[in-house]
Amino acid sequence: MVAQRVLGRAVNFLEFENRIQRKMVPGNQRSNLYAIGKQSSHE
Image (cartoon, rainbow, N blue to C red; front, side):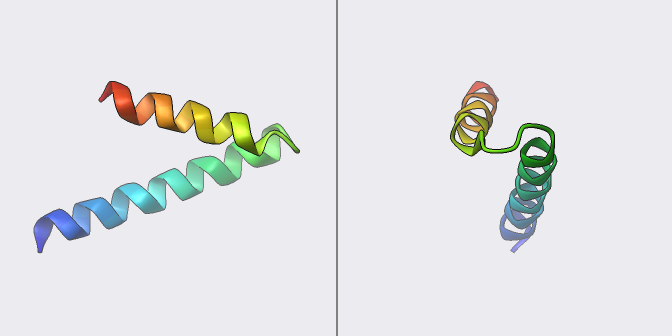
């Protein structure tokens, strides 16, 4: 399924972004998840 492949790629990208944000702002994981949620809701 093409949609599944695209979705998997998006999930991998979000995990990668989350890892970068966690390194930049340690101990601030909840607000990172909130920011990601806001980004995805805009699109």
